[in-house]
Image (cartoon, rainbow, N blue to C red):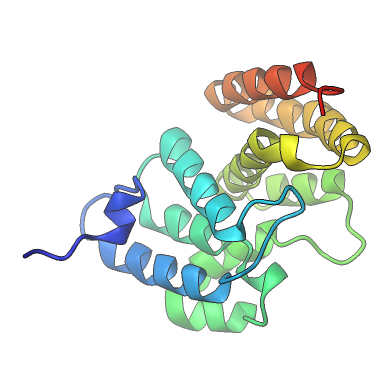
Length: 185
């Protein structure tokens, strides 16, 4: 019996010969994020996969960006270092992970602008991360959720409109839905 591929089962379809690096990133992310839970109550690995699916939907099947999507929270939320990411996946992936790793004391606005300044792929990754967060926002406490959604609309949606119109349309719809349910908790 043929072994099922967890990357393909998760809906990721990297292009060409890129499946190996995506598989390795997936396995590392699953192990590194084991047992971690987000503020919205969801498993961190589910968020990571949501971001990777968003990246694939809006940027295509490129391995470096998909790999970075799978690893985007690994430096921020685990003991893994950026040097380890670089040694396993190269400087391009490490650079993307670094571009979206939130620094201590950095606001969401500043983090988004820093990603923008690092290039289109970094900004795409940051916005796909935020889109997944918007979709998962109903699990957040009401006051924090309202502030999160306001920043998402004012900062992230504005950047998406400027750089990625299709992503902006999806983000606007997700924001409209999330904001319509404020106060329903």
